[in-house]
Amino acid sequence: MFERVLPQAAVTVDLVILTVREERLQLLLVERGNPPFIGAWALPGGFVEADEDLDQAADRELEEETGLDSATLHVEQLGSYGAPGRDPRGRIVTVCYVTLMPDLPLPRAGGDASAAQWTPVEAVLSHPASVAFDHYQIITDAVERARNKLEYTTLGATFCQDEFTIAELRRIYEIVWGHHLDPRNFHRKVTSVDGFLKAAGTKTHRNGGRPAALYRRGPAVLLHPPILRTQPTHPIPGHPGG
Image (tube, rainbow, N blue to C red; front, side, top):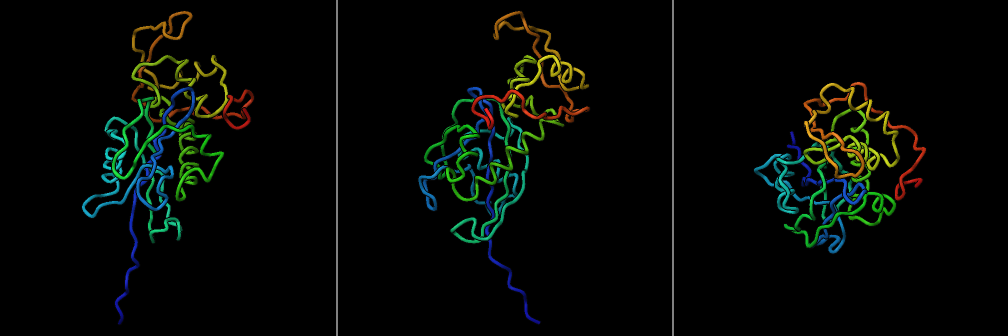
């Protein structure tokens, strides 16, 4: 009996880091400092080392290429991508992670990245050739995952600072989904979900007008009932249909 020869393949991790800044849903891209695609923009990521599992590799790459600490962010696995020819270096399968975070200053570039920048999601989605490898497909899938999860989980608050108003939370939903929401309906829905919001006990004038109550993210993970996306009737400029 012949011993089967296992195919040679390598594994990488890629990170789709999403945030809301400057009134847009943005993602972090790094400029590749090494071939292939040297000088092109791509997702942060790299090869999984022999002594680490996938989550450890994702945490390490996040720190090396951006200077961000995974312990302070929401990180979840999106899926794997392994089409033949997706990487000109050989048979390489990548496991993608999605990271959601509040607005932060531009992270530093590191590892094999020569620069890092925040880029509006729609600028990438409208130009498939703007990123290397198959990262356009990965980004498309990650953005849709984020938009879907806002419907049935409390992750919308992940984009907010520690304390936020309901209007600021609503603005997150509007930016991620790309259309305006009725303020009264939104207020009623988010305050009716047990454990979604926890009153901070203080108010703020930072958005002008009357003082607005501040909230923190509560212990709930799922939204029941969900907050479903509707067909955009008032698209936000810069988004599809806007």
